[in-house]
Length: 143
Image (cartoon, rainbow, N blue to C red; front, side, top):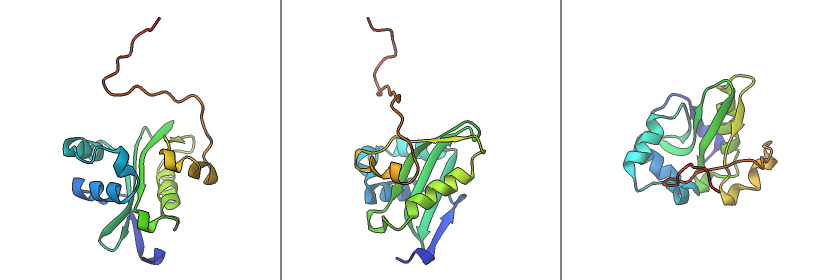
């Protein structure tokens, strides 16, 4: 693949199968519900920003984000086909995502364990106060 043949799209619709395929060809397939088509379709249907990278008709990268466009943007998925990594596709997808946001909007993500060292190299700062509640856990006062 030549980076000169890549095309980025802000408005190209993805099917659940295309999304699952690129997730599986990246490292994200291990941490996403690729066997739950209803959830995958919901992820696509309710994303506020979906930016894709294509080599011809092959999807090689995707940035999927949930945002208010003004204050914060959660980059919930950044997937690049393993065979196409280290060519700047992820950086281009993140920059295209950022370009869609207002000038005061903060880009936020949770790094996959294998990508933890990547994000500081491309301009992200670590944040020590991130908290998550896993599905099925209750939010309640403890102690």
